[in-house]
Length: 153
Image 1 (cartoon, rainbow, N blue to C red):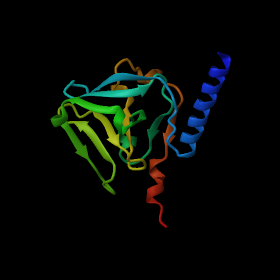
Image 2: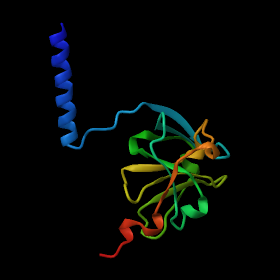
Image 3: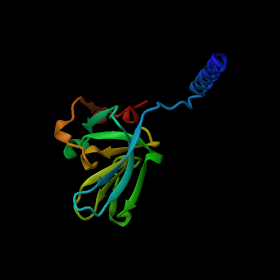
Image 4: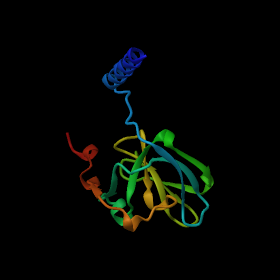
């Protein structure tokens, strides 16, 4: 019986190592489905977020420094608009690659598709149910003022 367990454990390690080599390995964390809403409640989004935020940031780019928002990142498959798609207004500037969304009714920024990583969304953590943004610690600064895609070659 213990030999079967050891063989199984060995196979799992082999598969994990193989995935890591192919860059398909994901960090295994528990995710929670949370509701993200704007102020008026017209926009409702379901977001899968880790049970503990891995990275919280504010950005100092020309747009984000004016918003002052604390953000975290989620994968494209981890965000689904369930109400108010028609209320979401797209705002783009500069290179027009990033897509920033806010509610047409109340003006609250909910999320954006990232310029530096188009496979991720940045979300407004303060819009997540149960989150108290003024109690969050270890909020880093993303240097959007010196964005790597803006550097001259």
